[in-house]
Image (cartoon, rainbow, N blue to C red; front, top):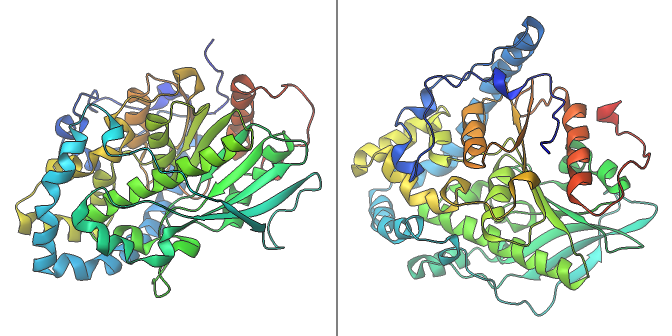
Length: 417
């Protein structure tokens, strides 16, 4: 039976006239002007006002973030020798997008000798009926492309994987893996933004994962958390995603070794992109809930001023077009592969006023995922209006796919009251 979504914006409200039907290979058939196509919803006046107002806020904040990324990436984009070296690696990566399986790029990780556990900082979430630990291990990841190995592994702090683990004393329990968005790695931000203590009180354990080049994994002289993910070119970005999935799978093994039988993943923005991709390589994943997920990084960049100016200039100098750049990064997009999680165990959350990750990107994933459950909220990337509604939908969804007993009365989080 289809899940009942409680959003004030039904999926039928999205005006998809003129938008393409997703075809394979998506990177080739998606129109080159896809990033320019409008996003419109047919809603009542109040909802339309909320969507338009939050969209305007998003556009302004997005420009600031795009400026930060542009400043970090500019030296490499202006270095002609570096750009030629980058271009020479494209054929290596394109063959993985054309492969029959994502496992040719996302290889099975080696077993680590030990995952270290230590007390989490005292200002983090402290449950009365459980424990919170900081986890870390030395990642055995090596870049897929031998030409990048020395340069990529020179970022020594990035070679240690980090996560925070919330456990009930009477565990193991079904566990939600949470993947943060770009630059938004602090555990406390994700804890509050997604009302994670409330989900813990529902009975779930939680593991918050730190992506490569974020938080403790960033270089000491990094201008901002996450800058190292995108500042060294697309080949480096590809390896960073391979690294992301690699270390996530090791943490999943760690949970399995603790006796956890049910593991699912959710994530915000870039974390949504990651959780969706994880569902394409891990058939043991019990559920997946990408929240405002990116699905095409290149189309996203071309919609972000002033970053789009740098990207189009670099394409022109190298004789490339948008299809070429999509192709070279397609192996880590969920659009490129079938999800191994059954359709009834997928839930997508999107913002109608989102201008960081525009609704048309959400719409592409929804098409690709066989029109699974989708909740639209009338806010933007940062302001999730009606968040209480989608949190309740997430609770009902989790009750339908996990072994925890549904219907037990538990307190509502602040976002729901």
